[in-house]
Amino acid sequence: MTPPTTLVLLPGLDGTEVFFEPLLASLPESVRPLVVSYPHSGDYGYAELLALVRGAVAGIPECYVLGWSFSGPLALMLAAAEPDKVRGVILSATFVRPPNRLLSRMRFAVAGPTVWTWRAARRLPLWLFRPRSDPFRRAKSQTWRRISAGVLAARLRAILGVDAREPLRGCSQPVLYIASSRDDIVPRHNLDEIMQLRPSVQVVTIDGPHQAMYTNPHAAAQAIASFISRPGA
Image (cartoon, rainbow, N blue to C red):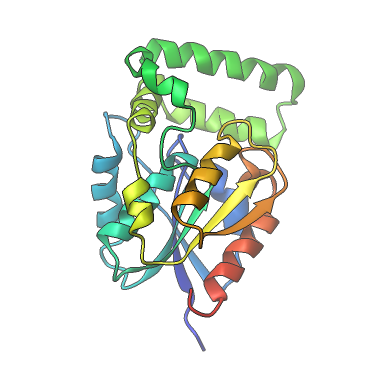
């Protein structure tokens, strides 16, 4: 019997396993998931998180890596740092440079108080239009309790300074991009840039918003399993 393939999952901006839970429940038994959560305190950029992820996979002989949103560049960095370990890269709703170029000029303004205000504004529609039992509202509330505005600000500053074009160009492993059909966080031009840099990237679009891997986990799981099982992947 063929042993399951290890899939290392790197989370979005919240840095937790919370939004991966529906996907984890949808993956087939042929895929063994390993979620790497990020520290709940401290000013961690991509370089520091890369060291953390490499430590988390040190005992794994080979794996695939999935980087969601914030973690897309990190997945490419891991593939570059561990070419003999990483067999394939899955990018989901992500980017290789800051997803909104205009925001790159405002890095100095991304601080804890600013992010706290932004988070508060985003909470209001959830409180007003979704019941307390709503799974998405509960997931958001869970991450808000665990991750401070200061930590999110540090990760946003990391995004505004990231450039993973070279790791993508030099990536020797096959790459899958899972796009969200209604992504209002990471605009389409980010996927276009990835395709220009590496035309061989396989693209699968699943229905849903930026968090489509959470809202449409079965489609995401199917795309992941198909990519992992295909010859040469």
